[in-house]
Amino acid sequence: MSSHHDVVIVGGGNAGISLAAKLRRMGCRDVAIVEPKQVHHYRPLLSYVAGGLAAMDDLTREQSRCIPEGCTWYTDEAMAIDADRAVVRLSTGEELHYNDVAVCPGSRVDWDAVPGAWEAVGTTAAATNYLPEMAEKTWTMLSSLTAGRAVFVISDRHVPCAPVGLKPLFMAADHWRDAGVLDAIEIDLLVEAERLVNHDDADRELRAAAADYGVRVRTGARVEAVDAAARNLRVRTAGGSDELGYDALYVAPPHRAPEWVAESGLATAESDGFVAVDPGTLQHRVHPRVWGLGDVATVDTLPSGGALRKQVPVVAHNIAANRAGRTLRHYDGYSVAPVTTSRRELLLAEFDRDGRPQPTISTPDLVRPRRSTFVFDRYLEPQIYWHRLLKGNVS
Ligand SMILES: Cc1cc2nc3c(=O)[nH]c(=O)nc-3n(C[C@H](O)[C@H](O)[C@H](O)COP(=O)(O)OP(=O)(O)OC[C@H]3O[C@@H](n4cnc5c(N)ncnc54)[C@H](O)[C@@H]3O)c2cc1C
Image 1 (cartoon, rainbow, N blue to C red):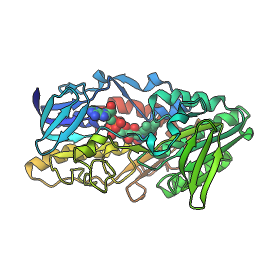
Image 2 (cartoon, helix red, strand yellow):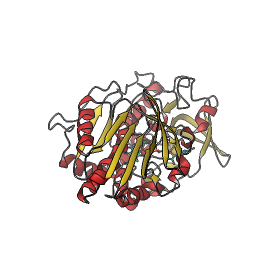
Image 3 (tube, helix red, strand yellow):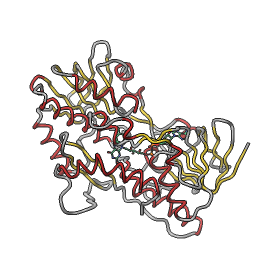
Image 4 (cartoon, rainbow, N blue to C red):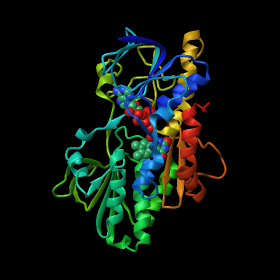
């Protein structure tokens, strides 16, 4: 079986649905989306589920309600892309021919990267909200701790919006303070990157907030292995290897691209299995009718939903410009990290790929933790996502 579509989009997550809607708004008549999942998650709220301030229902919609009108939806998985033949092959064996293809199946947790981590999150003493099915368990684990050591681990290997891994920490620490047990809990934060976030002022604010809760912060710290039975981590820092026990363990684990991306020849030696696009134009480095965006693409900045607000219009514009022989637009690497510093306040770090601040508004300074930004992130942003971003209202 085979069909033909003007544009085929692989992945109906934040990137794929927003791009499909944007292309439809721009007059593209024949857009197909390949997406196997029947539900769509607004993933930023997973942090609030892990912090006890949201439920899974708040972030879940039927995928059928998200697919933009007029698009063809294939409820299958893409297995391969043959860029020379301009074909996407589905798990059913069906082939979709395209004029242009946008590749955005996201990334996935790479449990193999940290031996023992998968076994650990199978116990009651460890959890991650990077898997939707474990987000509620994360809060159960954190909120039931009344004494001992809580360890929070944030990898820097392709983790989507990695600094938001700090949200469960700060919401839990605030809860422990309210519950009067903060003094009985030792909190260790192990961050693999050298900074908590790629923004000087925000990094300073977050370190100050951590100090206020008595959190011991170690950056440049890579967790090499977890011993689930002994509740123990092996950590490597510049100073050498160390062991650390835990009573509760939170992980923002390493991620990787789906294997079929490299098997389809869309990765390069440098791209670590991710879709090798020009980080400016988001056009594939070898195949000009292949585009990559979102967590799966080498966009050379922090992958985030906020970054997609800028990437989606660039890809939509560039597909048309490339066909017409016009100049392609460039994405400057804008990304964003909204981080709660308590159960009431949040700071917003916005920056480009060189860590230069790129605030959407200049006053007030959103890098200072505020109640208003917290309310925006928890309550307004989800509405903007469902009603504007997924409807292609991005420019
Ligand atoms: C816990 C958590 C908190 C976050 N918080 C924030 C935040 O506060 N702010 C922010 O800006 N960003 C945040 N992010 C990051 C943001 O959610 C991602 O950057 C964004 O979802 C990336 O969109 P995407 O479409 O590239 O990937 P995804 O949203 O992962 O979507 C990929 C889609 O592709 C589908 N797919 C996978 N494989 C195939 C295949 N073979 N064939 C077809 N379809 C396939 C999947 O089912 C999925 O629907 C957070 C992420 C997580 C996990």
